[in-house]
Length: 113
Length: 114
Image 1 (tube, one colour):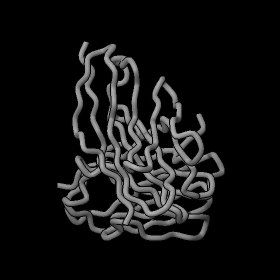
Image 2: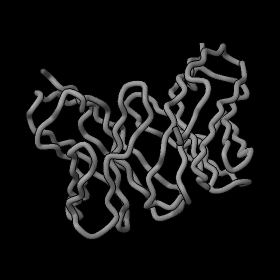
Image 3: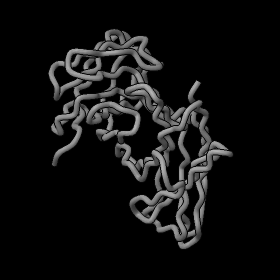
Image 4: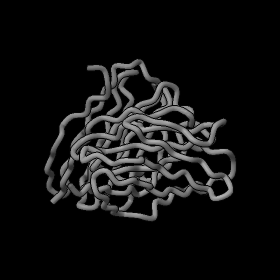
């Protein structure tokens, strides 16, 4: 069965520090992978997505993610975090069938000044 | 602004009451979804509609019904609300519903059932 695991519930980083949010997925075929961000009181917004090809994908707001098939991972990174990046981040996988998207439980990011 | 509009934003119900959450999108998307978000559990799919006139159950459909009124609108109904349905509800849409498409989300409805 398809599943997405985000092992870190909360992460706190200092402003200007680098960030890595972990995501592991379980899916039999080549997955479609997504990272979404949710600001307080808002819906989710797409940061980036991976379908095929280059395993390092660039997204909005300076985020990038790397797909590693051997580790079943799709970790999100940012070289230098800004206070406005404080939010909750969700990893998701799109299954092969129509309309099937599976979300991780989310990682809440706090940014220290 | 184009997007997904949900109403209401907040609602408090008593156990046993009924209500309908409304969702409308103006992007001519074919597929629409209802998710619930609970702490530590991420988003779970309640129901989805692949196209106008069709609806299907997701992971957690019990206690809910849906209606795809037309291409724009997809409503979620709680016939007899229970405290376990206290959650944040999100409507989303996508162009054709394939697994490689992004979802576009509304801003959510915070529902409390007392």
